[in-house]
Length: 355
Image (tube, rainbow, N blue to C red; front, side, top):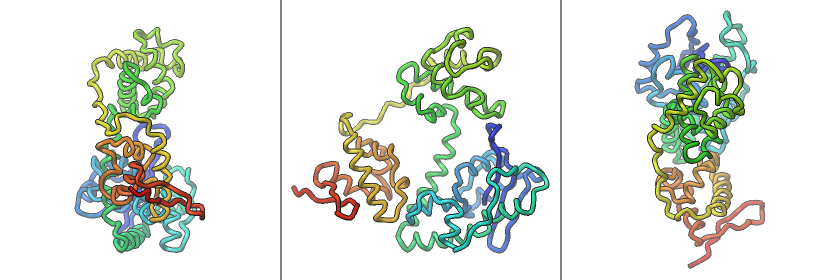
């Protein structure tokens, strides 16, 4: 399955086309003419839904069907376990099937009607061979003992994408807001949640309600009256009056009533400086990923590595398939039982330092 949609001027994606292929058939569904709600029965069935880079498509289905696939296989995620780093669908077609997808205009207007023959051909090509790519990836992953890893990652993706739509967590997507502390962070949490709900209510992008710069500036200044909004960086005349102005002030006032954030989990190293350890582990994870034909971003992001080095109890790299890949060796590196060295060929090796 695949979707075509627009959201440049809206909060919610405006779905323009849904492509569905199965063994022996393919259809393009026009959501401007057909109710997509019955697709929920398919998504919630035992059928495995194969998609590529499904993140935003999952949001589309949640919006129009009220649900997401019960069983998802994302070919972009799965390909990461064969050494490709976030490959495009075109790249997968070239590697797995040996041919190029038809070129299309990435910025085409999918809401226009009628759609041209080239638009229809381009849309259909996104799913026409996806099941064949799925089968090839499954065989390769099964032979390498990595199929369960890919399936676990797809399940985590489903849970992660669903959780991203919680307005109370919206502040975490703003880097500058995450760096705030104390009451300023609480104001950022409250205003970000208000902004998210306001954007959904009027169906416009969150940045059109209030830009990130303005949100962080409001958090730092904590205005108490509408008049206090004037002169705050990132705000303009739209934010000085009406429902937006009152909404900002009410959100600032409500910050004091927010439940406290969960305290940081205990860290086994007592908060020591972890920069050297993160640098070493990052270098080794990159080397190990290359050696094992894994996408390094799948093995561990910078945040994952930091959590592992800190000793966080919920560090993703300390459990599951990630621990199988890096656990013991990284443990030796961090404990001083092993050291990194150049192998003389531009790579790294892990050398035992003895006892």
